[in-house]
Length: 407
Image 1 (cartoon, rainbow, N blue to C red):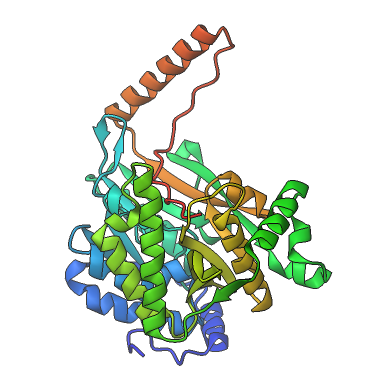
Image 2: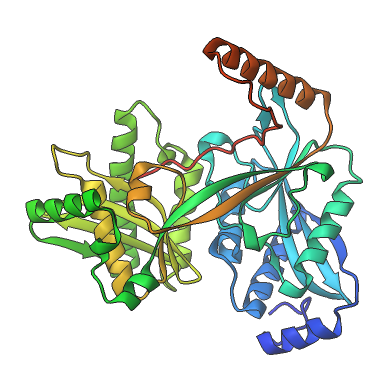
């Protein structure tokens, strides 16, 4: 473990030390990209000390992302110290293609974001790698110091669960917020009820699932037994995903070499300890679909997938997700999470929602004022043309590229 942390790795000892140092301020150091290896070593040590981090804030995820995107996305690290010891580290990346309408925007992102749109990993359930007792103070000090720097227009906190980031979305301080719902099924509730999984969905969905299971006959869910199997499942998923999206005239996310290479590396890093799960669903010796999950604090995050195209009343996507969900239920996961996106498919197979937040601190700039005025004019014209009352216009948070849905 890094001596920079001066810690034994015991969570109880960490809590006691945090209580003793509660009144000490958090000092922030800025490390540029030349100290990346040192920052990642600190990140690994901090993660071990804390007993784990959310998967998309983990040291392995961050290190792998930087290996594939660090050469095209400028970055640096904010390192927080209390009484000389490191309590937190934040990756800040400079967005490559950020813009508001016609105008380019110089943006800093917290975490693994800011890639070119065509290569975006679309981070969700983002978090800060920091001891909980110092999270707010560390974040506040980073923001305070960034405010003294003149060369940025926006600060973006992408894809945070609302409880994993300090509450900063106050319009009076320049913060704006875009909330999107992550749809998920509560597997703990299903397990405790003793009822069949299918009974937790709507009448038409239940009927469709049962009809498809009868038509397909014997359906099996397969899990890789080796790293070679995992890569074979991944390759099959990529082929199915790309076939679906190219058929619709879209490139598909695996057209990006960086994106594909990142996920191949994450398989090597995370399959062995169960943080990545790949499942293949088959019927009559035909693959209906393959799905890639990240396991985050007991939740199975349905990150990406590939499915056969629907044929008549057969729905490979519906059965793939239902059978994968049944697999996750039997393996003891607490939730089957489709992540952000409001597709009908996600909604019909979900029992709950969690708000995810994309927050932006925007500095006053003439280009933003121009775009906001143009939006107000567009709203006014639309309202007049439809003979409806004029809605109140508000500043808008630029949307990040949505994750391509594999279902």
